Length: 610
Image (cartoon, rainbow, N blue to C red; front, side, top):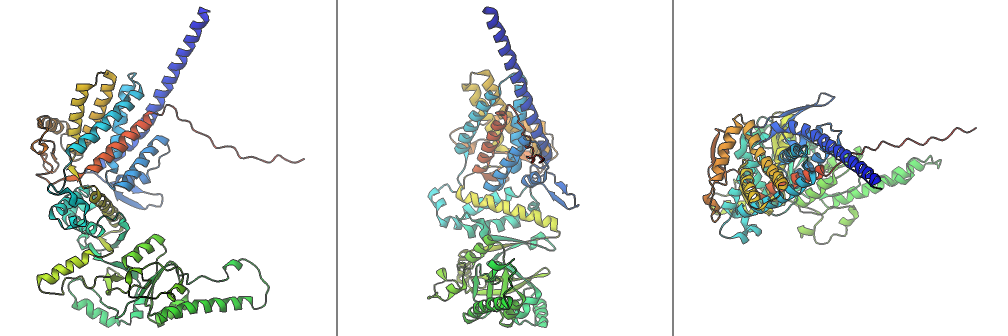
């Protein structure tokens, strides 16, 4: 019996060794697959990050350093790196920035863990250590974060905060830090101001679609501007519906030297928007049927045209001169619209229709017969017909746009006294929406500008709802690493768990090291000096007297205070989100001990009948 027990024990030990070997092999394969993404993205981090040229099979190219965009175009077949793409997409959707940092930190955590796993430390130890480190770092961030307003934090939840200069400066610094590594960084002041103005219009509204972003190729990115109201593109043929003579347009272009605008303000503009189904046939249910009824098609066409004509007569009777819908219209309806000076816009996107209806302050219409039931047209908030105060045609590049604004002429040329100017400013702040017009010399740069601006708007919008800040430039990573080591050495007695926590601290230090490397400096030398500076931080009562915000000025390689000297700030929730996603993703991959690839089932074949 003893011999049988010994044989069983040997078999079990052999099986466990084989399982552990297979588990380590799987973890190694998964981490090595993730490191391929790491080497792709490493050089794109920071203000001196390099761009990647992406070319498809049709020789269409794209130059970008945005991590989410690069991951979108990478052909990845291994399942483990796909998890990294998922967390990058989550970071991009929730915050709008830090996608590259999330992926890089995850890969570094995995790589550091692999070195010790190969030395027979169980992956579960690293999962526990990473979770302990994450909880500690999140608590430290909550301790050291700074409020943008020290006197009255209750004001942060009120709309009056958008008139506070201190808070607006805080938003400006966050915007400039956000675009420091993007294409908009070359005109950081210009776009940071535009970003802050955009958020002032959104206020606490999380719906960023109210700021519509339009890109048009132009001479310079400095021509980009935030326009009150909405812009709808029209073609040159539709300009005839406004009865504008081409010679008069040319004279207006030559006379107006400021913005080269063509202005044709309608006396009584009336706008409706909705899914009007002007091209819908009442015989849709009979399409595809071969009906032999005599004169059936003629009767259907006559009934359909009569139904559409009744709709158009209702529009003309109501005095509607601008129609916005989601379908194209037949040529005969287009001709009637031109004869009656009705301008038609086709917006196929339903979400964009909702945004435009909110901006022009009217509700969507799904049936034109509802116009007959409308009683009080003076109440614009519930009206189906919008009557804006300002309508004008703007030539931008080689295109024409119809500008619709509810706040009248916002050019600032109305009054001479300060009171009128203040009223105009307050009036602009009450606008329901705005349009961001981005200009760039090439189409490729224009697409990158649009992505960069949307990322900046996303993080600014989130900052309004969570306004606490920390120092940028990687200084917080060094401070977290220092405090984590000190805390672990003080309380952790398990050597293996201490190794896992130190691996987390080492990974945090890699982010500022990559920033220094991409800027062309000696990363080991500068990082060593920076760590010595942070070690001199002793006071826990007044963090402002410490060196916790000390970082490397990547312009000249000196160690400076990132907040007081460079005004480089970022929201505290940004770093918290980066640490949370990267730590959870690393734990998820370390939990995998076997990859099971399921082959597709063979298709069932009907046996041959005899």
